[in-house]
Image (cartoon, rainbow, N blue to C red; front, side, top):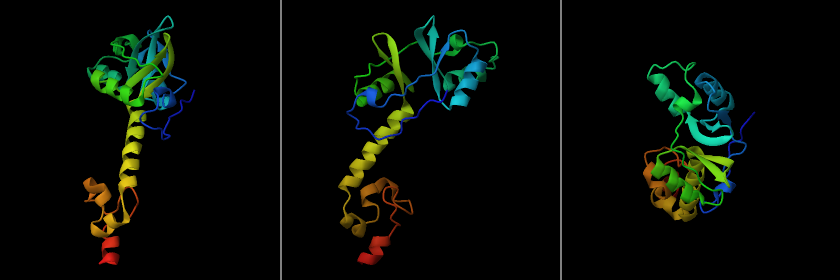
Length: 182
């Protein structure tokens, strides 16, 4: 099965429901880590939700697996239950994207199951949040940029990247307007 990556722009204030991924990759707690790893690679995803008799009990991520295999444990002998993060933190679909980001930061998790009435509704990843938050910042910065800012100082609207040869937002070359305007 292929899992859709949501890279569309949505406002930070929107609900998690507008950004979460569905369908969600799930495995049973008894699944071998070797098989879980193959599924992660095949589907190009970073985590799977772990179920025990159909109930969500944890999240197994690439990082969880790497930690265990890095400890020289045999992935063919480990199960999803052995490596999963069992301190389950979830979010309801109606939570705001910003609220979900705060929950992820505080819980120090990269994948957040979205649960509604005890059922899996989706999953939200740090990658999903990154695209939304970066898009929001880029839009804010570009909206406040003025043509005069380019003639006064290249990249004034993107000051942190003044060392770049081109503006990452508009593609203008360094000094292009300065040469024209002076």
